[in-house]
Image 1 (tube, rainbow, N blue to C red):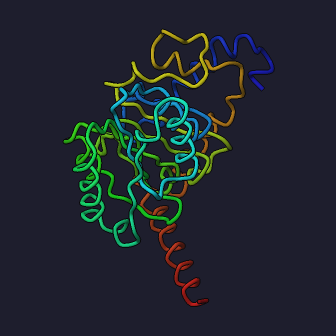
Image 2 (cartoon, helix red, strand yellow):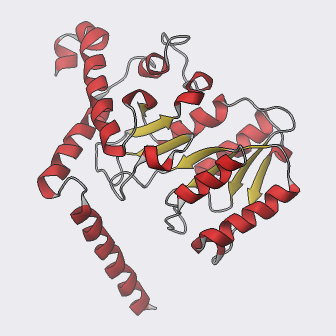
Length: 269
């Protein structure tokens, strides 16, 4: 209603204050600096934003795993045909044993790195979609950083489902959807960009924030409805009414439901 009561004041002044407050609160929830996150429509927008912003030399490579979400694969297919070449986007194949064992996963990855030089970045899941696997991304991120490889983490299913500590995980780029397990209104997502790389990243839509700060460039992407974004605060308020600060009760409850569902499905076979 505030936007309709005085649209000019809302877009020029009030919404900027509200979004700053939201980023400050959300940054505490995922433990990062508020200036390092922006709010976008969904993880697809975030993934496209990063992959289409990074500049690659003709001999530099992007890696991804065969279990990557379909949108990620299609985005990489577009990039390999329109921006880079097919030889610059390489898939690493993981089998059912490898995806459940971090040591095996990194050994398989190292085998690829031994064959392929000049890898610039890799895209991987925090919680994959199919199959549903929780990866030890803290170890993975450290592994790739030691090799100078940028990490883009697709955490579409994470926020609200598991605890996220971005300062501890320390990815280069991270995206997660608030409208999934945080139960906000559709659609809203968080994009984290490490300070070192914020000057390289630009939104898909170019508007009045171009050539300004990282926050300014991502804030104004044309006239739109910010109400879904603002429900993130309401979702966090709700969670505080049913759980402690660590939200261990919520995570334990959801884990138990998943366990019971898996047991039930196993009995049906």
